[in-house]
Amino acid sequence: MIMAALVAGSIAYAAARVYYKQRQRRTPVWLFEDGHYIKTQATIVEEPDLGKIERRVNLNFTLATFSVGLTAAGTVLYAPLILASIPFNIYDAIAMFEDTWTMVFTKGRIGTVLFSSSLVAITLAAHMYLIASLLEWLYFLNQKLILLLMQSELGPIIAQQWQTEPVAAG
Image 1 (cartoon, rainbow, N blue to C red):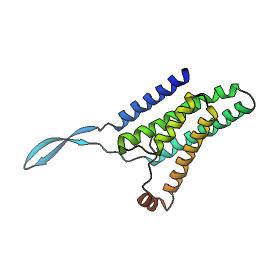
Image 2: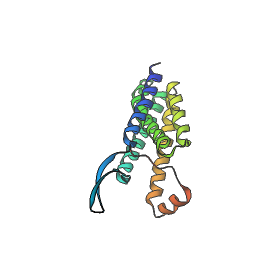
Image 3: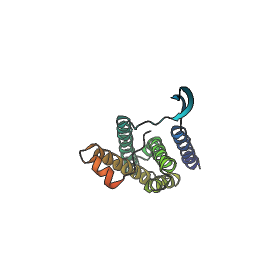
Image 4: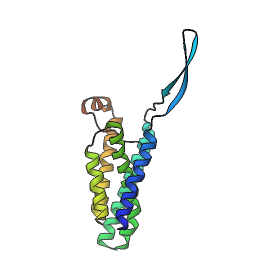
């Protein structure tokens, strides 16, 4: 029951964070037309910071790796280690939920990221911590590999041909 509440709270928290990040920010802009100043509103558009995205992916991948190790050790050797891995699982799950909400808000489509985050939510709520940790690790490994591909010389070609789901900044 507590884990289900944590998962539901994580989903709600991620949705709120993404909503506030994705809100269209408007700022007043004065234009000069026909000898008169006209006040208009402009939407601020920010380019994704690749360095920030890379730091986020590396952090989440490292935490997911640590979580898989703790959970596996807890399953095989010493059960209380599973409890130590739960905060890392929740933290990584929040990042996955943010990616899902970002896709829903920005692209308006539901893709594989929804399937991945749903599986993680279900496995966490069902107390299948090893499976949840492994799914999170695979998800962030995928993000890390996509980021490496996008940073390579083939990045522009791949982005144009493949139309990948972007790694969301968090």
